[in-house]
Length: 85
Image (cartoon, rainbow, N blue to C red; front, side, top):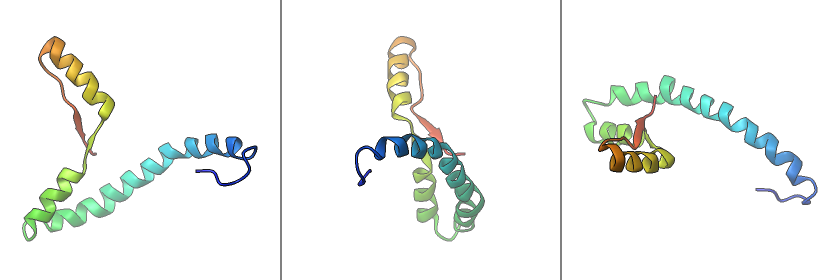
């Protein structure tokens, strides 16, 4: 969100948008290298937490959901969720 003069904001927003893919890569690395291994250690002692964590790590791609539903109608199959890597 831009709280500065309107003439300044348009130049900053594209730059911030270009940073998003790199930030997602950094987040994925933290999840895979730090949080996922910690969750694994809790699988047997805290199964409810572990199962909820794994469910939360599934990413639902809304555009894929619509495409899959359209594909299901045409082909009878499709998937609307991808497992986080």
